[in-house]
Image (cartoon, rainbow, N blue to C red; front, side, top):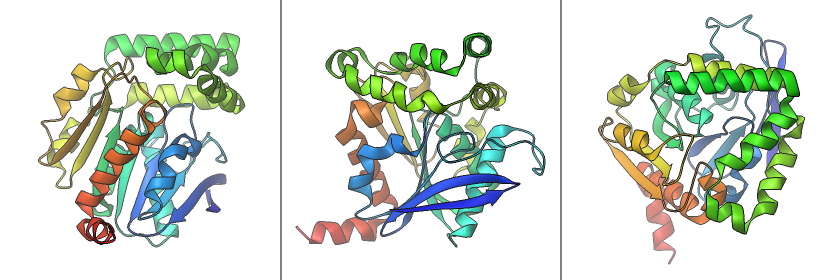
Length: 282
């Protein structure tokens, strides 16, 4: 594992690189950092080079201000930061996989830098914009954070991301996730929520994309409903779809192996030589 940094408009951006093979960018979601992929890394890094950033305001990365960017939209700014990481590493084409908000960033990247993309994975994520109900929920959450603080907000919201079976069987893992999120401040979380509220409909990007698209969705997901997720699956020209049973919004933890295997299957589809060499080893 190589921990790296770059400076982007006076802000420090942290990311990690490990593994061998074709490059894959793994983008975490709201109130997470690169560690959210800890259970998939061991599998994927044996055959792929993983680039795992901390989005601005998360982990080892400073929050960004709009100054210096052509767009004032935070989602678009995050996509521009990821492009700078690829440029720093001299990577021309890469597969992007994003969890939840990370998927929104991946879609923004696809909009601005389609020539750099050879595959897109949306993991518990959607190309649809927030509806009025979702925006109202986020506005309420912002007011709660500003009154009671980030720690109290995440203590209440994180458990709702997990399914009933996982919550009952592994409460200590949920507590560990809450504990790890304690460093977040209100400013970062508010920026994320406002960015998600403002993001546009990206279904046109799914229609225009010529690269394969992976959808991983949870049967019990309350954040990105299965019904909405299924609606977008028919839009791209080439798709792989995995529905995780007894799973809510956190398949990377709730269904570690199934999620990792689905990601590997998709990467092997994009990079047939990598999969062929691995199969010949058996």
